[in-house]
Length: 328
Ligand code: MTE
Image (tube, rainbow, N blue to C red; front, side, top):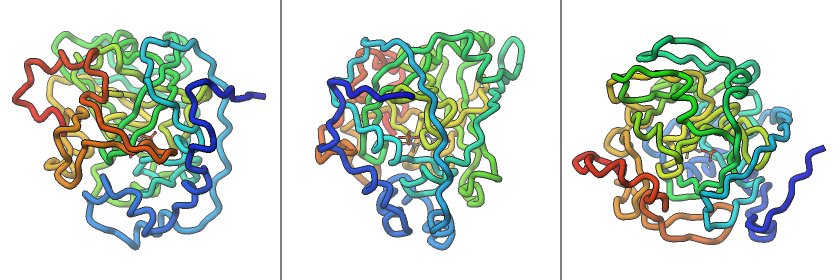
């Protein structure tokens, strides 16, 4: 049996929002309020929304296997870890609904077997099973700050491997400039796909230079266990210097290309969400300030830091891109 160790930097239960309180935020109004950020970009679709969150038996929780991996202390978040129950029940995963409370619905996500297709400008396009992929990389645990564009943040111990390792395995051509991530779109289990004004499937992208950055990570676990469905099982991106929407969940395809992709949120609302989406307190979202962030599971609000505090690792990548809209 897996016993979760309480570590020195973990928030004590008394400081955390009770999981029930977070899970209890179901229903149309609460859901819309909770999702006031990204969701408000889309037209209100109350009837559809209530069909996604209303009633029904929650799916049986997927069993999470222990996933031990050596801890990499290089990226000390200098912030208390978010309570696990809160971090895994306050989610954005629009394929399962617009509210933050999609954890129960997401248990239906089919994750085994899982194949990732490697396509585009590579020496040899191919498909690789996740199990095979994991045999070829070394897992480690890193604690990163995770900052959503909606001005909330959490701190999570992720288990995974550098994105650069996947790039190496994929062997892209020298002409490739971008890496595009396509995520699962399974209409049988994902009610959100019924809403056709969203440009499904959810896609994201980075430059090859960003993909090679030491912070860019592919997560297959969190809190010492396999990653739960609601957080992007079985494999998701984790890009801690960018707003959370760049961190695509449940990746099924990576495509190497020489054209900058138009990603999910950009396609939906390009005036509010762009390709770069680097964190910056001085650049407000058109509808709210980014100066502060709310640490979920606590009563604390703290100042936002440029590059989410990871400037020493990433800022230099953008030195020659001053004319780009780097922070939206
Ligand atoms: N990936 C997919 N496939 N679908 C989504 O809706 N939401 C994004 C990102 N990745 C999303 C996604 C957004 S807006 C955020 S803030 C983070 O996932 C949230 O990750 P978390 O729920 O693990 O905190």
